Image 1 (cartoon, helix red, strand yellow):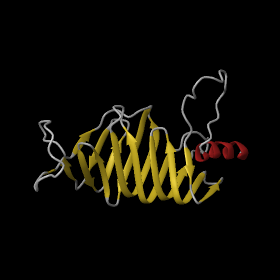
Image 2 (image 1 turned 90 degrees about the horizontal axis):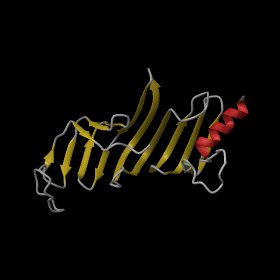
Image 3 (image 1 turned 45 degrees about the vertical axis):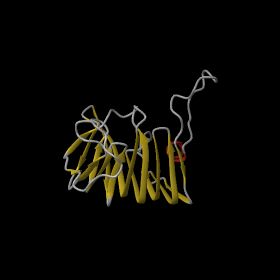
Amino acid sequence: MKIIHLIALLVVAGGWNLRAQTNPTAAPAHAPTRIDSDRVDFDLNTHQAVYQGNVRVDDPQMKLTCTHLVVYLPESGGRPNRIVAETNVVIDFADEKSQKMHATSDKSVYVYAIQNGATNETVTLTGNAKVENAQGWLTGEPIVWDRASNHLTATNQKMIFRQNLDGAKTGTNLPPGTIQNIDRLTLPPSQP
């Protein structure tokens, strides 16, 4: 049984894409996730992979860099149910309209769970948390992105729009006093 867990851990943590190849010319259903770092430790007892130093995650849906990354896998294998990135966290991704999003924080915690048939998937940014795109930026402590409902929630937030609320774009040099306080921002649906 331990070899199955090792293979599952290596598949997710190492970024290998294992799939049945019935049509060798068909594109893969999902491109692999690649994780590079200076050092990695696999703990088969706790089902964790701990990456340290110059960590870089290259996934088809996003890019992440940090200093320390811990990936938690369920005992039965499969999709990671918790990922913690710490120190100089930078996350870049694009929405379905190809709009680039850039997030930074001291710590980022990804949690995935299915409870009562509903998918719960969140990313929580803490410590100098900031999310920005072409329309502006948002800071808060914490910033929580609920990927299942596509909502971004920030506490103690400050937001600057690079366009007026009526849709007219402003210049790149924003005048003082353009900070807008917003409790909830709806994002476009995430990519599968």
